[in-house]
Length: 598
Image (cartoon, rainbow, N blue to C red; front, side):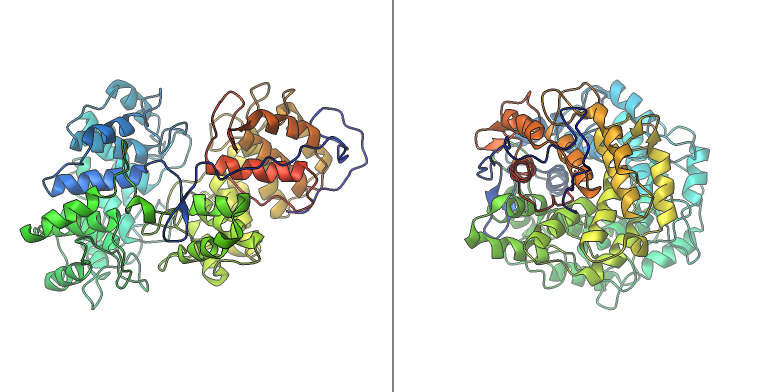
């Protein structure tokens, strides 16, 4: 982002104006990377368990006739993700979404524990239904096949209720099929993928549908064609075979009454993924076991009625159990090697020790997936746009970078039919992810309009527009972060932007306590303040360093930063990184803030 420049105007609030004066700036608070744990693979991790890992581990163990070593701790972790609306979130404090709700509810079921407040979960799930017959990941988003699949399974397997209006669902699912037989992520999408085929086929099965709403023979042939000469399956043509694709393809084919053309070849490929530890790798020559690969191999074998040989079960159970964190859920590998891209990038951005910088950079570059162009949150799973932005921003800060040649096409492939971008390929659009895609293109040498359909992005921004700004998704409440992100996206795409008008637009969110709040007259918070300052910088506006510094002093706690002044403990390594970057800027550092979103 460009550095701030004075507009020569006197301030009209405590938060904005000509406060480039540095006589009352806040000295940077020393942050000792609170909430980041170094890992033996050169990266860093957050100390919390991961929901996706916890689901995969719990389900794999159940398939193998086993349980977590501390099942009660896993159940407590899962229940802690439930929100007041009845849905579940990926992390405590985030909004509910369908995917997280299914993972938590199904894992509790696998553990033999009841799902709390089923009536509230049912009411919340009903609000994710879209007018076109599908389901959205959260209320207000467009429908996608990921969300539709998880919603159908929640109705059938957790709530014990029929999927409402099955005829509308059938029409929506029928719109996924493209010429050639495969399924796309949403009606109108031209991107076909084995995962979309799996989610569509199993959504219809969960709904208890009779005749399939598509050309079943064409879909079966398309899925079978994804099996290569090595016996493995790939998500799309031209990409390497992986265990996750094998799991999705085999279960989709089973749901359609078919199977792989070369069963022996598939079994040989799956067996070749077994490592001496008893775990499984996701790709050929990857060399590292994780819970997702174990889940995928065990599940794929079950789909073709070839369960794991009894002699192999005990060691695989030990590998999976070894990924549980004490007193909570799971991560994807033994904790001392389970780095994640957000923590690793945050450590780099927040001030890593000089001797660790090269290792952290190498970890982030290695996290760029072999079959996609983006960076994985945790190695072994799919690429996510916010994680890729954080990784690129951290590397850029040190004069390094990701493989931008692969990034451009990947960013292009993230764009949905509604013009926006979701967390990962095929997921429903939201403003945070759309902003991350645009700013990722900018800092990696691509023109946003070169890799994204400009008119489509602007159309999505209009969909999120509210009376007084923008919301994260259509129909949600206005927030400062969404409003600031919409301004930056429009500016990056060449929309004429009046800096003075933007200053006035953000003014209602400025807080007398310092910094900015998510909504007018609310308590200020770190994330909203970062988004506001980043936007003002981008448009060349000054911002009141003393005013922001006042909030930062309230947020500084125990060597880190809290997300809100109401909290009395550090918010973790991501909060620490954002706080340190803001404090350094408030102290007069001319370096522009990196474009970071959460």
